[in-house]
Amino acid sequence: MQIGNNNAVIRIGIVGYKRGQSFQKSPDVLGFKLVAVCDQDADRLKNVQAMEGVATYTEYDKFLEHDMDAVILANYFHQHAPFAIKALRAGKHVLSETTACKTIQEGVELIRTVEQTGKVYLLAENYAYIRYNQEMKRLYQNGTIGEVRYAIGEYNHTFSKDQALGVAPGPDHWRNHIASTHYSTHAIAPLMYITDTMPVKVNALSIADPDQEHHSVRRGDPGSVILMRMNNGAVFQIFGKNLSGGGTYYRLHGTRGMMENVRKSPQQLVHVSHAPWELQPGESEDMVYTPEYPFHAEIAKNAGHGGGDFWTMYYFGEAIRSGEQPYLNVYRGVAMSIVGILAWKSALEDGAPYDVPDLSKEEVRKLHERDDWSPWPEDRRPGQPFPSIRGEIKPTDEMVAYANRYWAEKGIKVNFNSLP
Image 1 (cartoon, rainbow, N blue to C red):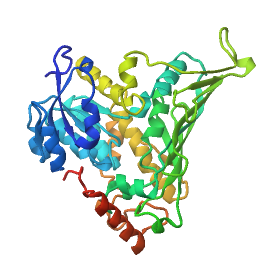
Image 2: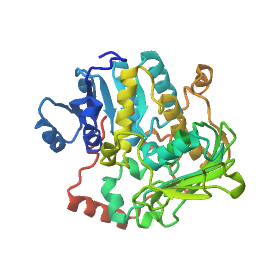
Image 3: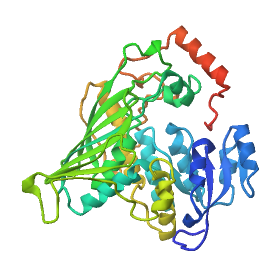
Image 4: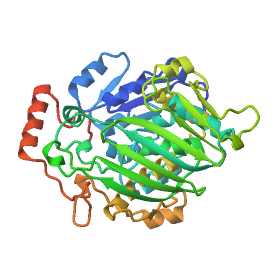
């Protein structure tokens, strides 16, 4: 299938079926057809094999030889870039789960590969498309609050001890080694999407737990606060991700008003506020309402992540058929991903500021093409950081024993969704 063909069905393959299966639920209106799945879990593949016309693979290179148009990457968080690069070079369009890259070096190679191949790349940052964020984008584009000056993005996902072990099976699971600033795109992307701004400078503080080793096998800190200077001069504050009191929240202060989603609102309410002297004809000082999706409302309401899983697939298909890269393209995807990387550098220096390089420019990319600085354990060597401001954290023997009992009782397999 050639990019820009508006009629053909888009044949897709999924890597990492546990998370990836949500994307196959996209309705026929999107024109996708699942033809191949790649996973290392034999039991999961047995279920896939019962599906008519879907091939299964455990080897990624063999999977890429399958006759298909696009690949959906839902493998481990920090493994997306190498898989995306291989898929693009194999002639496939790519929809990649977050994050886009684990190092700036990977980001440089990913951008170059998209430019060289001409294939579509979309970062599947579904929180940008939650109903209230789409509404706030519409309001912002209409000038409802003027130009943004300050914004807050929060994505905080709290877990009990057992829940944390359940989503991170095994001591080597990526969730047990992630730095606190790295999982930040769910908080960053909606603000960038709403305001169409880009980060140019970043600094951060990490929030450590001095008793973590006694109640967790996690090696990274539970939370962080990131400040970003945007290219219009605004300041965005980003908070997350595993502290007590979970939820998502976005607030934007403009030159003539404020808007936010209402916390803990199952109706996905939007709140818009103006001072009396800021009002224009037809506006109210204070308004709270339930917005609607711009279209495909009934379908989107049934999709995961507030409809975001539907919209990422919708815009992926639209990009492939139109021949135009999507809004959440490789440049924005890499930019918001390297914010987390640079923020970790800042946190280790107690908030030192770092410039965010503009990797859309090749002359800038050349300056960063060897930057493999990384807190991930597979990259550990002298000069590389740990994922906590406390240094190397070693869980207690009691906590390790508790974790092993939990995993054994649940029959959880280690590394069930990770590919070599």
